[in-house]
Image 1 (cartoon, rainbow, N blue to C red):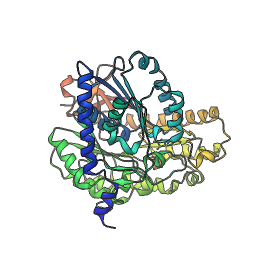
Image 2 (cartoon, helix red, strand yellow):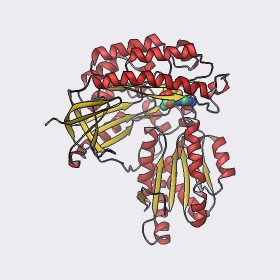
Image 3 (cartoon, rainbow, N blue to C red):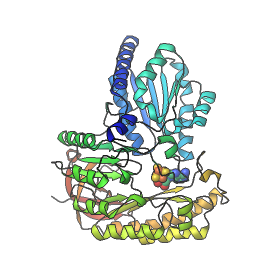
Image 4 (cartoon, helix red, strand yellow):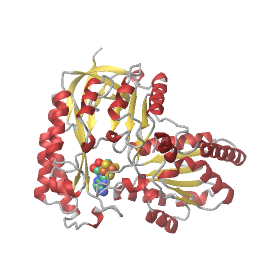
Amino acid sequence: MSVVSDIKKISVSHEEALKQNEYKQLVRSLVESKFDSAPKAFVHTYGCQGNVADGERLKGMLEEMGYSLVEELENADLILYNTCAIREHAEDRVFGNVGALKKMKYENRDMKIILCGCMMQQQHIADKIRASYPFVDIVFGTHVIHKLPEFLYRSFATGKKVYELPDNDGVIAEELPVHRDSEFKAWIPIMYGCNNFCTYCIVPYVRGRERSRDPETIVNEAKELVANGYKEITLLGQNVNSYGKYPDYGCNFAALLRRLNDIDGDFTIRFMTSHPKDCTSELLDTMAECEKVAKHLHLPFQSGNNRVLNDMNRRYTREKYLELLNYAYSVMPELSVTSDVIVGFPGETYEEFLDTVSLIKEAKFTSMYTFIYSAREGTKAAKMPDPISKEEKGKWLRELIEVQEVIAAERTASMVRKTFRVLCESISKSGLIEGRTSGNIIIEFPADASVIGSFRKVRVTESLTWILRGELAE
Ligand code: 5AD
Ligand code: SF4
């Protein structure tokens, strides 16, 4: 099959985009007649950066429909929760927050409550919302976010509930407006979905099959961002390393990185997430050679035990993972590696867990996201016997974090008195400027707020386990 027909198969058609534009105009006229001034929309996104990028598109559409975006929930005329399904805890938070909206809805019946994102793509969740949260107006899944205008119009026009969770392999919607949350850091999704089916993970079920955006479109989007003064571009995907496989554009992830690195301008390129099974020496060499690519690799290992890795369907071994890291450090001695790990996968024994502890001692991660296994309905692992209690798993987790704390502290201590190029991002709680090194390590330092959004040289004066303190070096 040709690339063109492959792209056509997965893309939202131009006609569909035009249809949604018509719905936008209809909603716009409707809200103009209903409200004295622009109605307020509160959008909250849970979960990963992929969801954040979707959230920016949902906000973009709402703005085009005449809504003004607000940071406070109170007095909002529209509340949209863009949800996450990765662990039970993420779902519990959403249920709690939606429950709290009941009173608001009964006080303001014109208010619209909208739920979308990964959690809503699951039928059993949508059923629970319908049965227990009848005040929710619109629920839609991950494959139809471009239809928000149509759903909102239907809700206004009919007053009926809108539930839309088509179960398909997923689409690519290119013609959506984007409300970027930052003026100097931008997300570019480069691929959607996941084909890996790690046995614990819900993502392949709620995000559909792996599909990559056209490299030309990505490069043009990046050029436009750089021209508009953006200083950092983060490429997003569940498994960016397998970018370009479907459709096969003849441009793999390493080639895409080179094309982006060739764009003129002073900016940094980041990416996440990488899967060890697809992380090649070609990619690591490319990272090393491309001066705009941050020397940070987020490479989830999940477990240090081969039996557990096999049951997780990760398709690499502990030895292969460590070999990969050694190669990465050999071509980028300054590389900062971060990772994800799951403690208490079904059937994991304490001895097997100790292999995870020994792996982190060897790997020397800068930091790590640690999770206790959470059973997800519909996944293979959810059917595996899981005899270890939550309390016991909690103990293992604390043991792991203690070891990592020592490693992280050694790492940050080794950075003291060195100078790093830092993107200044915000004002921290302690009133200092907060920025990030190329390795994605947070550094705080005193400076005027005018530095925010620019690169500065910062000399490290102190290390605080996970983060650094410093001073401007120029
Ligand atoms: N339970 C616990 N952690 C999970 N993750 C994914 N699914 C689960 C689950 N069912 C973690 C993995 C992944 C990260 C985004 O979330 O470590 O890399
Ligand atoms: Fe989930 Fe594995 Fe896909 Fe990551 S690679 S999204 S952990 S299935």
